[in-house]
Each structure stands twice: as C-alpha cells, then as structure tokens.
Amino acid sequence: MAYKNIIVEIRGKVGLVTLNRPQALNALNEALVAELNEALSDFESTPEIGCTVIAGAEKAFAAGADVKEMAQKGYIESYLGKFLDGWTRIAETRKPVIAAVSGFCLGGGLELAMMCDIIIASETARFALPEITLGIMPGAGGTQRLPRFIGKAKAMDMILTGRMMDATEAERCGLVARVVAPERLLEESLAAAAKIASYSQPIVMMAKETVNRAQETALSEGTRFERRLFLSMFATDDQKEGMKAFIEKRKPSFRGR
Image (cartoon, rainbow, N blue to C red; front, side, top):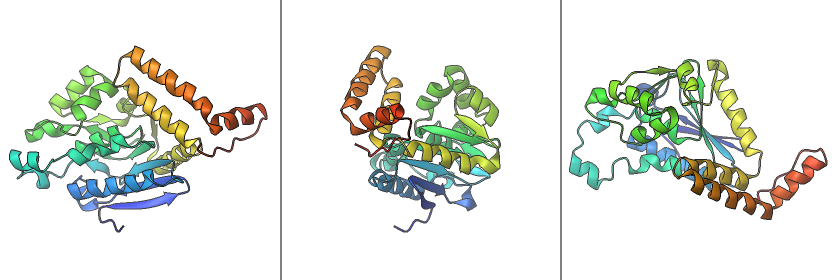
C-alpha cells in the first residue's frame, strides 16, 4: 500500500520502517500508528522477513504523541473510539523488532521504542516521558514498561519530573542495548537485524516469547515455560541442522522448520 507517514523498505531478510513526519519531529498520530501496524502485519505474514528495524530521523526518533491531535479529545470520545488501543500492537509482534533511536525519543516515542525488543541508540539520543508537563501521564505503557527497564526509582524520577536521560545513562541503566556513533546507527541496527534473521525463525520467535514471559510471570513459572519450549525445539529440523553443522564445522542452513 502507499504510505504517507512512514517509508517501508526490505533489506534482504530485514524489514525497515522509517517514521516520516519530519515537519512534526515524527510525532505519532493515529494515521502514522495505523500505517506502522499495517507494515508490521505485512512483515509478520512474509516468511522471508525475519526481523524488523524501526528508525526515525537524525534529529528525532519520535518526539512524542501528536499533542495537536490529542488536545481537544474528550473522555467519552476517547473511550468509545478506543483511543490508544492500536498503539500497543507492536508489543504483540512475534518476530523481533529493533528500534534505531537518534535524537529525541520522547513520550509516545519512548513508549514505542520500549515495545520493541532491542533499542540501539545513537550517541545523540535523548529519552524522556514528559507527559506530566502537559497535565497527563504516559498512557501507552510508559508507567509499566519503564520501571521494568530501569527500576522504580529512576522511572519515578523520569515520569514525575519529566527529566531527560542521555544515551550514556540510558545504556548504563539498561534502557538501551548499545550506543553507537550517529553515522553508524542504521548500519549497526540493520546488521543486528540481519544476524537475527539469519537464524531459525521459529526458534528466534520462541526465544523472544520466552524472554518476554520473564517480565510477566514468577521465576518458577517462567523456567517451566522455558523448559517446555526448549524441549520442543528438539522436534525441529533446524535443531538437527544447527547441531550437525556445529559438529561438521560448517555454517548451518536453517529452513525455518
């Protein structure tokens, strides 16, 4: 389909989505989110795609939700219209998603990045949940995901004061996986995605599901879930191929089954 707010590309086994509202620093409106969900759905149903990268611009990954769009909303309109319902679908994708973050990553932009599986940040990245300054609080998972990334104390600090965190601090406290030079951000992100996509797709999806389970259940239940999926992998052709290739000292040829 023709997209107005994002640019969609396929790079080998990697799907690349670039947020494209430069006039608004990639502020997230309902149209952009709908297009993003559509693109991710297409990648999910395309067997050749094994991982997705979501990128923004050098100046801003996404500078929050579109305040002009939200300002006049009322409670009943928002409730009946299921406002924000579609914003969290990215967290439900089964294939891995990497956020390549440069510049401002604020409000809804940070919530979007936290729904991804890996955040790779440019040295210029700046993170904040400044909703408190607008008379609201984060509403697309920010109050729930941020403490899981960085702990209660820092999450409270960011959410209640609206302060901004730089890339170095974000990496130190576990919000981002790695920090790279600005000119290498997309290259590093695509390389990581290509590496993930080169492995057995069902095994990668199971690994993602298992790690996510750790955030939602007790340790005992999580380890039981892990064990069940681990044992199920021995029924796959890719497990046989991977171990055979290791023994034969060659690169495995995974077939996704």
